[in-house]
Image (cartoon, rainbow, N blue to C red; front, side, top):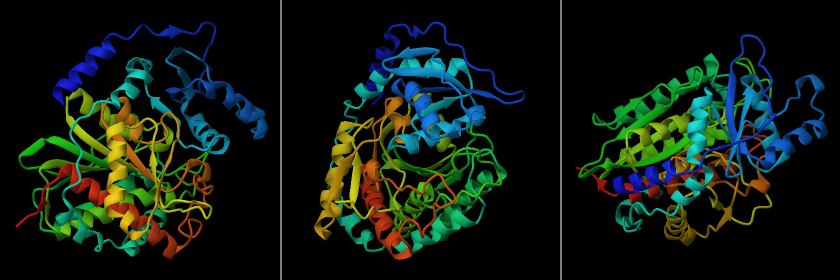
Length: 434
């Protein structure tokens, strides 16, 4: 992996200079408000303007996305921070994706990120880091029956209701993330594991919300790192404040709860991986993938040998028109790791009659993109195609009830918990300790 990292670094340093778009000037943010810089696909610059009109956004609330620089079809723009949720609303309402952009606190940081370029990220997907194999069934299979969908629903409900929202820049968002850390620490304590740490590392530009990070140290391959993550924050479209109701049951309490149940099961089995395993609850995903980007860029700067990343964003809702039970994301992901996700499903879930399909979601649609952009192998399971997405996300109606109810959500999320366990154990390898 070290050799690969040097190759990527050398390739990036040879990129051509960025093209400056003349004549475009960004609007000034209101007094006292921070201006953020974003990278976004070029097509959205024009489409966003059209959408604001068709969506009847008040004229006083509309704004343009100035083109400051471009590279490989990606635009660097500047936006008042309070306007970012409106872009998110456009991404969700105007196109069948969420997110869709990276956000930065400074121009210099955004320019450096843009220089990594979309092409670099997509080329990095072809770098096979390890030989992904499925041969740990003796450890994994007994664990799958231990997964409790009821536990997952209980965690989703707690995350949805214990605070009014999990907005990144308010006290409820911080309280909720600290609560996730406590929940994970309690699982570690119950398992009697003194080797596992749970921390809340600060995140640049993540407002009041930290990342939450649990680390299970590896043994003989401890320098190689396996990452699983889901995002902790929630949003209710534009004008979200610390008082706005944003339960975020599906988006993405479901992902955090799914990983929490996978963690409970492997800890109960006294799992001892060969590779170091890290589990994240990312901050501020809904406003530009800030928490995952912070984690990925820190790993890149430290030349960390990340050998595989699994992202879980949306695991609770199954559209009645869906023809498959599990979907694998095919864009902005690593080719080898994506094929491995399919093999995991074929090995562990297909024998129970569950079918899998493929879907795509565009540039920067969720936290896997942060790792892909940094050159690390990342992949993602998701609840359905993005054309059949849960229309209640990003609203006060994103609840367990609107995701299908307790029984349906328990059954659907349990599938993802089983795949998370399989991913952790097959990439991290190792097994039951003494």
